[in-house]
Length: 171
Image (tube, rainbow, N blue to C red; front, top):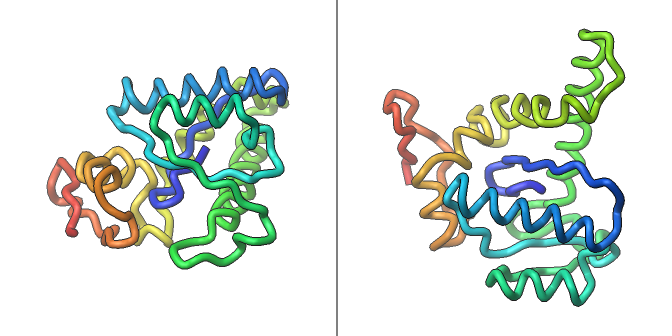
């Protein structure tokens, strides 16, 4: 799961790709956002080709007041605000590269054991698309959470004042 504007990633290992398993992990994701990070998700975009486009999943979203947009991948390659599929594809490529390098370095093939570590590394890496801030710098910033919840994200200037310990946005 990727916050498209900040590029912040959450990853949960699925036992299988059944709707029940997806819903179980998505509930954990919602709980993590609400309780650990104090952030409320307000909308989600997912492929309509997935398990996500089922009534049981839509009911979960409705029960948590999460808006949703189902798209066909061929219809969303270019949009007004960003290209979510390109961002997801780029994350996947970067994640695989980081995981492969790390596993080679430690001489291991036990990738599930290292998922959280690699996601943390990814979230802490500077991104050129974020003016060389990391996804963590942006997503975990209190001003981003307030702004993202109340206004459209496109207006955020991603220049974070790093001289201030609280990383205040210049909006």
